[in-house]
Image (cartoon, each protein chain N blue to C red):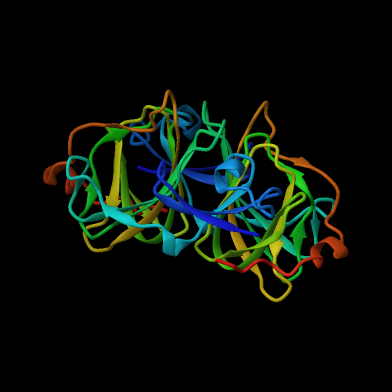
Length: 172
Length: 172
């Protein structure tokens, strides 16, 4: 039988579906060894921290790292004109664009368009920002791995001048 | 400017969007340091290998591991009744259910339902299978990390008897 418990460590309510979850054992005894399922209605999203985002961005944590896995994941929706601050990821980042049209820029490079269905790799240590275009929202799944307990280093905001500095390259 | 090249190592056509991609340098000189973008129309999917899947399953690789990152990802669509063989992942696996209704089972445990929006964690080394329900397809994003170059160990097929052994637990 599946048992449900809100885990304070992640603030995500989980169901357990494992070999020992069919017994009367408490969820704490199966955590770590059993399949865990979080359903969409048990997760919440929060506004992006003003220090790290310009404009309206909403962040939903999908999962935190488990055991020896170092993978963390979330979903971010940016309203038109909204973007992250400049930042880096110690082991890089994968963005999967699930809706809308976004922009991404590496320090010193052009602003590029991200379309629905795109998979974007941002190399480890590459200073960059990503967000919505000025005329469309974007929803992106963001996947990043922890190094020494950290998956991001935040830098300065992307100024309005930087954001509007180049017409996105649509050569694809 | 963005340059495009099909990389033989991954068979995914990539665009580069990095600091040095605005020069005349060849893509090979920016690979590894530049943002890379693959668009949906450049990726292909293939039937799941018969040894590893029962029924009709289609597998699309989204990305392979880059640099020090050990993350790999794909999308699998299972038609009704289709499922993976039993298998394990050396560092575990995250499934994100993006459409339909699926099933997952850990060896010795109940068969559990996976609904659209669910995020499923399968612990490192846990013997399990996942697939569609008998009456619905399921589409899932699958994320797994490489350990010593390997992200899965395939085992025996899930028999019809195992697949239909229990009514899925829908207690959520």
